[in-house]
Length: 109
Image (tube, rainbow, N blue to C red; front, top):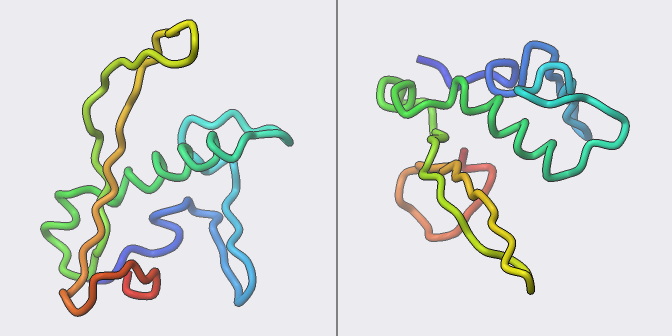
């Protein structure tokens, strides 16, 4: 099998050139597109979109896929001086490569 395509990970309208990556907000999962989306909301939407095809099942069956994203456990945390209750949700991103060095290098994936 082949490595997942840019469009499979980021949406059918995703493109790239030597300097830029273009991901249409309308392709992202759960995002209400606006001119002022936060960086965090964009990151979560990108991860949720990528999670659709970067599954562990696909990873297990495709030797060319190097990453999978899985839902972790939800819990609660108290934050701030007033100990406000927050729900915490996890997305686990697992990166796999042949063991040759102990550093993260994006070019390995």
